Image (cartoon, rainbow, N blue to C red; front, side):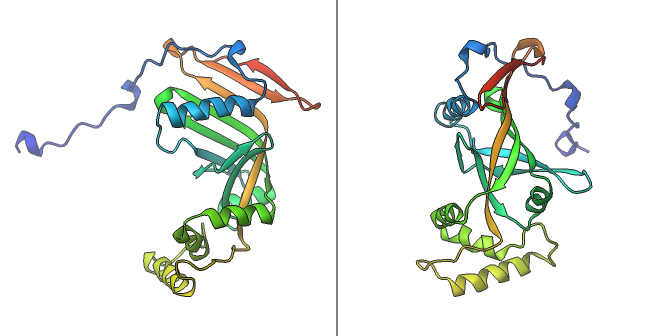
Length: 224
């Protein structure tokens, strides 16, 4: 066997170490609300760091038996009312949230050594809001929302493509695609929002906003 034919050695994950940035996050740096602070960091991730899909977040839910599941979903809107994403309500996450609305969102902004972790309660958006967003999607994405019975078992890729082709013939480009009744948004109203900034020697900064009963926010520092 030549050197060119040799199988590369398996990387050792325990040996993978990065020294994080020295720039810190102090209590005096924070905005008055977690959404304002999120907006600052989101702009830095999207505009200054040019991160690929900074709106990608890991959504974690729990089913009726207490079994957790996670997946990556795209954030589509945020304001003081919460963080909004869209999905098939019959999907696994949709069913989970129907039974247990408590949810965790994680924004893993690794190139900036930052994370934002949101814990809150998810509620469905109104149909008018859902319809307005659905009509802003590309035509192919609108058809995809109908074609895919998300999270269900299918026989093969061919079935999915056949379903899409049938819908494409029924609703050609330029026509209006109806909003699927089983598809829509969730708005996550935050109870806590943690801003995590990587620091040297694993002495990270972790500042968490906790919602108070009067609607104000208390900021606490967590040990890394």
